Amino acid sequence: MVTHFIFMSSSYSKGTRIALDFIVDDKEIQEKLKKDLDEIVQKCGKDVSISTHMIQAKDETWESVCEADHFFKDVKVVKRLDEFIRLIQKDRKLEGIDVAKYILSKVKCTQLKLQKLVYLCFADYLCETDKELFTDKIYAFQYGPVVETVYDKYKKYGYKPIEEEKGDIKSEGIYEMPSKSRIMFAEDGTEKIISIDRTLKKYGKLSASRLIEITHRQDTPWSKTFRSRWLPYMQIKLETIKEFHKNEQV
Image (tube, rainbow, N blue to C red; front, side, top):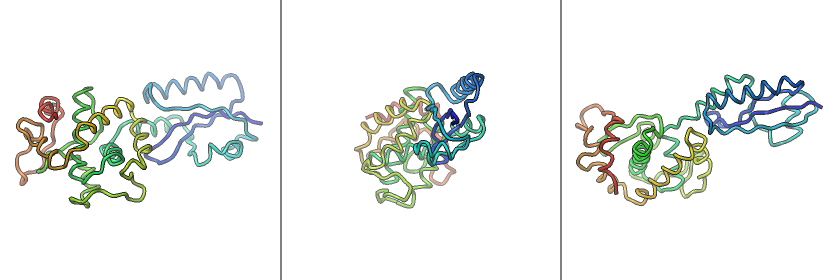
């Protein structure tokens, strides 16, 4: 029998669980495992989600691990520590679409309402923590603040409610956990979920037209940025959100 020591995490960009597999064949490997774990935590954050497993298998192959315990079936084995870290780091940052999918799992939205809620979640979190909720830039469109990647994905719905798509997150809470888990895995994930839920409690029941009224008030980040529908879209700067988001409160 062979002893395997396994580090496991999730890769949301790959859509699978990932693992580093070590063969425990002498005492020195224990020191290496501790050193590798310390490096993962140092580079990926103290709150990174990592599990460790020790299992007896008939040989050194991953196939024997899966035979010994079906829990490890369909796990992608990563051969190098640096690649394992790179995959985790990639998912420690959120994109606007990650927040949009979580919102859709809780609130029925048109793409116009979704845009406003994604923006308001970003603005609330930025003003609460002085940190960015996701990496996308926010632009001042004619009808308010817009995250371009979210707009590109859902603009085809126009004024109709966004419906379930294959492989996507469905409204009405059916697929809430995958989208929530994605955010929880990110850096400061628990803090971000709490902030998003708080924002949705404030604004989630408002109509798209009411949300437009809020973002179009005098001295809001949008009003300080938007110039004309005929000009190129202007990015709403973080400093502008920090200073003027207070005028979008309900």
